[in-house]
Length: 510
Image 1: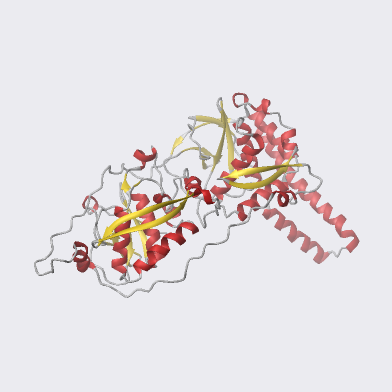
Image 2: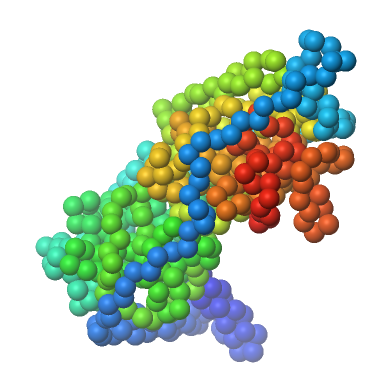
């Protein structure tokens, strides 16, 4: 839609360059151009409605690729340091003995620039939201609760006036009803409404997944939660008009939103349509994916992009009542550390059902501004006096021993990669979660390059040290990455779990 507007703007410049128009005729000419452009967009809807009214086909479910070839281990091994050499002093810790064998301590300067909590992104107030619409379009104002944050929105009143929820009960839905829904809603002046949802996406700092969740909350606010079929059809309409490649399907139990992404998604069922994988969207809800559904081939002319699951920033959740505190407790070189950390429960809820996509998405996600500011303020003074290897070993011990281990299947009854923020909240974590969190700390606090090490049933990390470090390592693009396993309890840098020493891991770059 935005691309079309840019195209129209370029057309304006071209026409004026070759055909000067009198000032008094400009408004009339502009209205004509807008009318022609609207007719161009209406043609998309007309063709799309015709396609929806045609016979739909039944498609069966496919089983997605697994993220691991084998199940993860239920228990973790612990590294037992060798006894101290006789010539060493008795009061030296086991950690310092191992570290002395593998560490070349380098001077390392930390960036001491203080972390500054950004100001919350402003969400338009109720009166401001009303100003975004054409004065000639009757609108209804609603307040959407988006992870306990109020979002004010207005939508064309005729969307509700022209639809009778009794006509769209879940068991009565077929392609004719879905085509009828599209025909009614597309005939309403909806452009400002859809563009408002996209402006909220930008204002609130949402990625595509966050926008999908926002659209679902908006649809629920319009139609209520009792008629989930209308909610999901409205999701489909908004996402399509916003330019996303998504579809809708139905069976005897109701309607399903389907989406295709520019990333991979693992451990998920999908339908193959138009040569793409379409996954049922889980809007932070639990429901069974049907073995087959009825849906259509082809798409709407406005659909120009797939959902992108990458995370450039966290949304700014500003509900102070959602903040909770935890403590990371561990021992390093004979000293006990208790590191306080502050979390926002709304951030955890935001990522609860995030699709199991490519590992680099999680490795580059970082932490929310609030948690990063508080946690790093605690860690930076501790790390400042250490060499790079000692600092890495400190972070290793933090991640290895501050959390209890449990596989995702045991904790969630499903596979889940945790964002760095989530490991601080949940009572248990596994190798994926610890590797993602550890890599984040090493990159952002120490400035060292990191890669993932993906084994048949395990994930670890390797660090590119600036100095020569003894121990196990892997080469990638001519660079040496020393093994650092945040799941191998008490193991310092340079040690691989014994069960994986004979296995060559896949190098995961990000």
